[in-house]
Image (cartoon, rainbow, N blue to C red; front, side, top):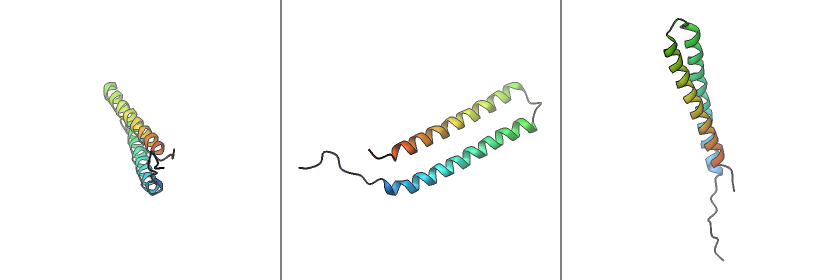
Length: 78
């Protein structure tokens, strides 16, 4: 009897997923470092500018969380 769903080997995708996760984590770390250095080096900037920098940093963190969630979630075999 033929199988309803073909079996797909996802093991070759593990290496690509790991490389992507490491690259994303590195870039997220750089973004966090730049945000931290901005707040330390420019304490006299306007509050609205600091607010926008914080919002952009939060968006970047959420994008990293989403990429990790989707990458790890896609490689879990059924």
